[in-house]
Length: 511
Image (cartoon, rainbow, N blue to C red):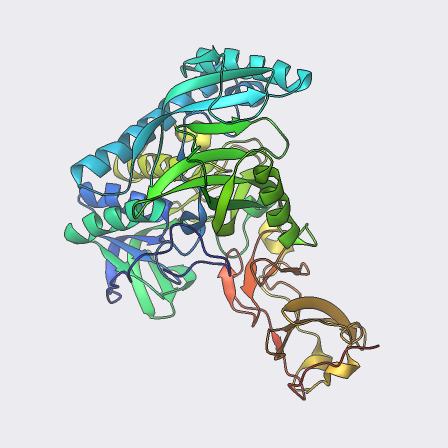
């Protein structure tokens, strides 16, 4: 199974999913074949709707294929923070709906007989200094008030020192893509339709008809749901969500000291631990080192730092897998689920899940299904994307694409003419200058060069090279592109403009 990065996750050893042809119409078109899209289409299909999922690549290509698959009601945004940002009632609602979502995942697994290693676990949260201890006290108090039972623990299942710890039962874990394939199969058996390698390029509304334009043709629909992690194109939500990358590895141990729990510290950024058995092999999954997308010059160092930290406490036999993945943080800590501002009433969105995408993707399926089928949801106001006031004229103030520097059109540029490229190493990407213009160049392991214009076609920010994933990442809104410029991750819907080089030869290093 392909994913939106160079590194390989623990979850990618999956067979090809069989795609269907694009039909002429559907009740609901869902854009995005990850946990959110496939959970939502399954809910709606059960309600009697004819649903079609459009996936630009293959199902699981995005963050679902790169998650660490913690299933929590103990969330990254604590109930203390939710109560502070909203109120106590909101915190209780968040616990209630995430508790229902976790139960729905378990119900799907049992009902559709999905073999995905699902297991209920206790989650531990621990503090290592006085400041963290005070924070933990607030989290325990607010969590219990919201409905999540947390109590202090005298021990933790990882070999680290701590000042104080707490635990919450009835959390869970699973193999993310086995679950994804399982619900996709159930959706298919109900008559649903998943169309892979089919990018949605535009949605138009004319004569009371909504048409989704794709790379495989057009489809008429009554509703459109963007389950693409962040909606494509230009939207006010791009100013309300910040893209982050998180790093993870799956290791085998020499001493079988695998934690039988979900474990989290309170560092900033925090670290997280759990164990998963895959094909008869046990792995310790460890993650952290989160940072804003495009804001870390050496992403390889994030893996090095993560491994170095883990080796201090565990006898590692092998780092079997390591990968990074992207998520979006909302400005107030809760996702945006509901009508997409600035669009007709039949266009919906789910985004801003933070590090809890597996749970909030399932939450989104419940809320969107209720909004479309019943006209309302008890959680609609809390998660509404319109819970802020849009900036007047925002959609008119930005353009979908930027102008390519005219001096680069139709030219063949010699690599020696691009400033800063003389010392470009194999398997390295770098931005140089040519006649006042930025040009991004990547040299692969065999010395072949690939040049693109680095201005993101979404809103014009300059992309940065991600060494660990071999991609060009936008630090503003999280669009990601391959080394040849193709779109890997929305919100961009167009690739980076290529720059033609007059030669494809290895750059000789200066002495």
